[in-house]
Image (cartoon, helix red, strand yellow):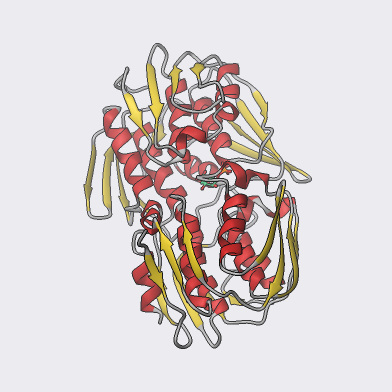
Length: 437
Ligand code: S3P
């Protein structure tokens, strides 16, 4: 099978770029605009497959959505619609869309929808979302394995206090959105805390939210809402996308690369803190003025990474949520380090777009890395580099980009089959990476 080829860099990578718009914030900006009363304009909306799926699903629900390039204008339907019922909604590859929209639909008394998506979506666990929403009064029909395709039936929702068994922003968000429509306050607790975009963005739109912290357990409470404000938004760059060219710079000797306009929310920049512990020279991480106030607006800034000598580290469960989508890049960096790297408490990786523990182990082993899977993570013995070879993305956007970065930093280059999966979150990735050579 043919694939996309990523040759070893012929010299240092250098330059200053902006990478793709934030996927988590783009999904929320569109969905929360649909929930609002009035017109919202979103600029720099991510034109990835996942976030285009969100616009399509909203349009199917009867939300007036207009897009011109990366500007999206949405006329909100208000929290209770009128929302078109009885549709079969195709979420494509997007777990975030699947879970967040379920929270909204669960509160539409008398409505019923089928949610389905691609082959990967059909393996994503959904009981983690349907359990709390059913406790609030909605009903769901899932497949035997607790997966889509599923039916959601909306109801008039009751208040709950929910202790989430997983640290998941998607679960938390679904319950908080449903909470806006409930008859009393709804709270969600999780340990450790997941990304907080939903809290920050709903607060900006006038939702009454409070956050309390008890050690590493964080509880968010939302009051029923009688309407959300429409707001205009400019989407910042996605740290999860910026991570790929920045790790390429870290691994190719002599490189120095800056990515501008990255969302520096500390709930998203955990990868960079782990890489610093490995010895990476990184500047720009401390400029987030929203730090310490999880209901403040998010502040973007620039991150610069210089190629650095790396050593192995141990990564614990408490560090995973802030790096959950990038933790496979720790495995890649660890192949180039000296000493052993151990990642623990990352079992959630097994239920992402693919089983990313199995995926990264297969991929890096094929390129000459010494990596072994554990139940909830992996162990890498650093050997200072990777040989090269041919690998498959298995349709997972983040594994496709990881393989490309591995190729640029490898001895003989990497051919990536099914590389086009990268379009899910970062359609310009290959050209951005090439522009740094
Ligand atoms: C996301 C949350 C994360 C992340 C996903 C996007 C979000 O999942 O892996 O890519 O936008 O809420 P969980 O926090 O649900 O594990």
